[in-house]
Length: 400
Ligand code: NDP
Image (cartoon, rainbow, N blue to C red; front, side, top):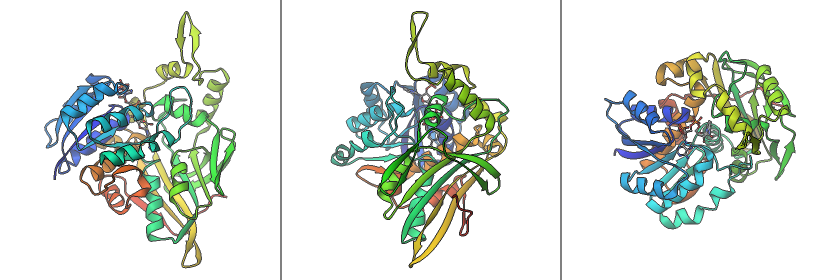
């Protein structure tokens, strides 16, 4: 049965998700792309016109709940796919409740004035979604998203108990700039300049930013430096994976990126505290965003691969075992297919898949759910079909 989806936002990730919805026209009969800058939605709709998926566009301020509600009531989608920024999550959830639509996103809510991302604000909507008979699926990108589906899949098929999870996010892409971020610079820099943390024996252990470094030899990529970061899926996996003792998240960074970031931090350019500039209040990080390359412009220049996955250690039938699930994605291949680099691609594909599974009722609530709470098998199958095939190893190199 063909469904209707409303995509909010028209940046790097949304562009890939919309391409994928159009490839999957058996499921997505009609989509509406609505964002702050309507001309971007129109340009994308124009590029993809002529296929079987009908595309409409609209302007929307996703911080305006009334405007959003009216748009959802008018279009009557089976699912709203939020691909704007984390700041809009709660407004879009409110509008979904008011207009009676299911909700999917890829990143948890973050208040504008504190770089602190936690699920508590969105989990507070559980009862209201349940009472309304609606489903909200949180975190349907790659990490969070695929990494959490990997955890549910490992638990379902290979373990009685998972005790340790290391999530490894490697981007070995080279865009040729001394410093640029692969997705929204503001979100990216807020994430990497925050303190690190991991989950161990029932509580958080906090580290200084980039304090813990390891080197890992990634399949199809080779050895890379990686650093421990706080990451949002740790919070929900700690609750949803029984018997868990430790969850860590590592991301690779090159020396040039780190050196520039350090310098920008030292001079105050990554601050989110407003400052006075010629009688005007500006936020240094937002100004920095305006001078950095637009992530969308990196597509044609990025070469190399990403490798993102999880290493699980635990027990099956009383025996210790380890298992590594990962996906390798090639920046240039992604660009050839949908005109975006792999970081947008690896997020946009799972966003489309999550929206599809909610839209066609394979995954049903009602309530607010993190992605690992649903049956992972249909999602894993769809990853292979829609461009993110996964690979597995039963004797992986472990991270100490
Ligand atoms: P972009 O900045 O490229 O795109 C964001 C889009 O949202 C833009 O089109 C922007 O409009 C639009 N937007 C922002 N504010 C509003 C508003 N108030 N009303 C309407 N539209 C608005 O970001 P990305 O595509 O890189 O990221 C999208 C989301 O995906 C983010 O939440 C990010 O955190 C998440 N993400 C998740 C990952 C995962 O693996 N889970 C990985 C990477 C990203 P305009 O065009 O006018 O600027």
